[in-house]
Image (cartoon, rainbow, N blue to C red; front, side, top):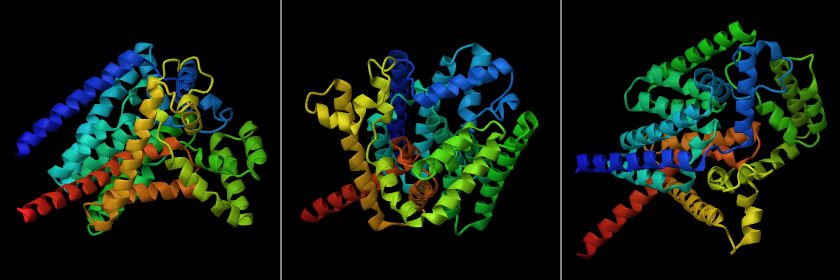
Length: 408
């Protein structure tokens, strides 16, 4: 029976992979603003024959963006002259992430929950088409799931920590999952220490490599303090002034934003706290960003997200385009996943729930404390939300089976 379920899982993952490649082929590149920005910086660095951040432009950059996606795009351009091989590579990473997700779920929660989680993951509309852009979420999640899988399933904790550190190179949220793993290993301090050691060693290697290349010890993007400063209306004019300064390098600008933000929080603590509910709503209220892949006129639109925004969907309902109907279906599915994930917490068990719960809670707390709200920001938490939802679905199935046996 177990082997049969694994065979079904393998078949589903193969179909999922084929669908991802077909979407990339059929719908082409999706010009998200951040993706275009990464590719533009990659081309700029290629002309300078340097990696990002280019040493010559340290003081010209307004902020330090995600290093991994930019340097990955530059590698693709250097090797092939095109961004398309990178998009295909990302698409394949999505399929591999699905394999690892199923294996990790099976280790944490058993095969029944794992196959439910896999089916829920594959049926989730927003999981399709991520490979059509150079955004950071897809490679970030590959390294997150790979690192956790290596530690939990293969028991290679130090190497797992190293892979998790690579996730941070693509998106500055790896510390969230490091905290989740430390919580998961709370009763096994040696494993926790080895995982953290692998993480820190890799951060040091990347940081010193960039110090030799650019003169700055940098490991991940530095946009958090800037975003938090921009989020507060009182600090926005000063924040914009820091962005325009050419006498400061990107690390010094980040320090200036940190000082500005901390000073503002000290003077306006209630306003700072009052922003948090809006950040929470902005992060979790909608889930249609990835569906821009399927827009027929995505290259021509000045504001690509507009057809799938909540305001537009409400305004156009019920005369919606096929993509808008897909967005409605995706929202309904997403809200059900959130509800099931919350309901699963009533039977919380350390080990089964702890990793997923810690990842979502720590990530949400980070966004509320030192970030801002945006729908894209919950995407890295979705595999763990789906896993929690699968736990609840399995619980309902088991209770139904027990009830039916009782009736007989």
